[in-house]
Length: 71
Image (cartoon, rainbow, N blue to C red):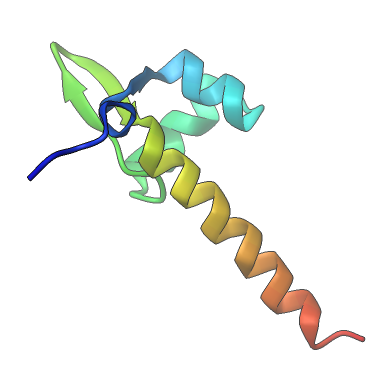
């Protein structure tokens, strides 16, 4: 089973928050509420970049689906 090395790219809290354009505190709250998947390495949160991108896409589709019936 081969994996794409980019699938293993990990982001810290600051990097992921920057991508989402939110504060680290807001991102931490989203992690604690299990809205965003993350795990700790050495006591610091890490988020897999590929999963964060998937999460963003899923949120985009939620907005598109909810707007579809409003025409």
